Structures are given as structure tokens and as C-alpha cells.
Image 1 (cartoon, rainbow, N blue to C red):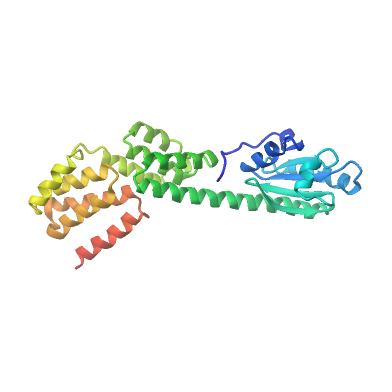
Image 2: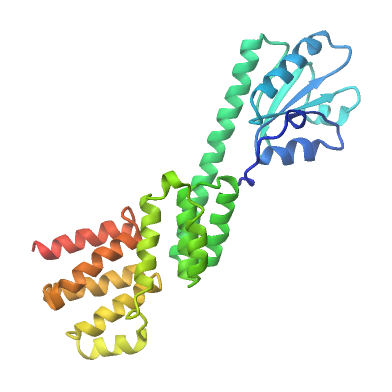
Length: 303
């Protein structure tokens, strides 16, 4: 999907001579963390001698955003044959292990620069798409109750983008669900100062506040039996909602709170409504739980 975040390599590292034997490591594997441009050339090729120094200069000028691997086709015929190199120079860009774009012949510097810049842009778009897909997969896993699996995916995202706030908040929620509050704090501290007040992070802090409520440690089965015996047992219903919320079961908790409001909105100085608003913050302002819950609350209050 995507690899760990790479630090910009030194100038000597972004340009190297490749070979049949090292092609997988130097090009395929390396392209998992950033685009790699391969220049197929030969010592007898005049246009190759014009293009190569231009490529080297431009790639080094990109400050580690792209790498260049030079392959002498006379000495490395296997890869040249596999890539169907029939005319040189031939330049092929790789990203995520696959060819991304190419050109043949010695182009003017402006066109070569445009080619490299497009490769970097296209590779970046591919990485962003992969990360977005990963975030969706992690959120789905967490909602399905697989906190450990979700945590693994969020950790992969942070390996690629260490300041991704959605991944930081998601990983923190995973540890919160697993009851490891110390790790929640550690993960939240990873957020860059400029994004410390992001809504996703605020939601996690709100969830932590709910989890720290000493009254939110009830016996779900016992409270459920009490409510079944007496639907008007608002105190039991309220405590059940709190207990469910600390376990990350926001949906069922919302159901219990709305039931109280439906039956007696003023109960205990509107405690159910006040706690419900806190729960919306904990779930995340943009979450389906918060959006649907607010609609249901409005329907009750203004009916």
C-alpha cells in the first residue's frame, strides 16, 4: 500500500549505478517509499551522454523527492530486455513497484524537468490515495470492534506521515478502547503544536474525560436487566449509557440517553441531554454517531 516515511537522502544517495542483480532493491523496493527514475543508457550512445548529466543535476535539485538509477544496457541486458528497451536513452519512472511514466530520446532540459516534476506529483497523489484508503479501513476496523487491527493500520499511516492528525487521533482511540490511557497520552503528544486543537484530537480528549468518570463502571448485564424490569429506571439507564460510552460503544449509549430524554427530558436537571452532548464530542463532531444523534435529539425536542 505504502511504505514508511523516508527522510530525504544525501545527494550521493539519490543517484546510483544500477544492475540486473540489484534492480529489485534499487528500483522496485526503493519505489515503495518514493519515485525512482531509471535511465537506460550505453557508452556508445551520443544522446545518452547529453541526457545523463542533465538528469543527475535535476534529480539532485529535487532534494530527495526522487531518485535516479542509471543502467548500462550493454552490461545489464536482462532488465533492458524485460523492460523492452529498443531505443536509448530510455527513461522510465517507477512508483509503488510499477512503471509510472517514461520517455525516449534526449529531450530539452525544460521537458525533462517537467517530466520529473510530474512524476513527483503523480507519485504523491498515489500515496495520498493509499493513505486515505488506509484511514477508512482503520476506522471501519475500529467500529467493528477490532481495535488491535485498527491500531496496526494507523501505525502504518504514521510511518508514512508522522504528523497525520487523523491517524494520531485514530491510534489514540484504539488505545482508549483497549483501556491503555498511558499510551493514549503518548500518542496524543505526537501531534504537532499547530494542530493540537484539531477537532479529531479534541474528540479523543473528550472521550478520555468520559472514560475517567468513576460512575461509568457499571455491570452492563445487571443494568440491562434492571431496565427491562422497569423502563422508567432512569438512573440505571443513565449509568448503562455511561458504561457503554467508556467501552467505546457510543451508538448504544446514545440510544439509552435518547430514551431517557424521550420519556422525561427534564430528568435530573437534563443530565441525559448534557451527557449526550459530551458523547457527541467524544465520538467526533463529524462522525455518523454525532450527526445522526443530533438529528434524533432535535426530533425529540421539537416534536
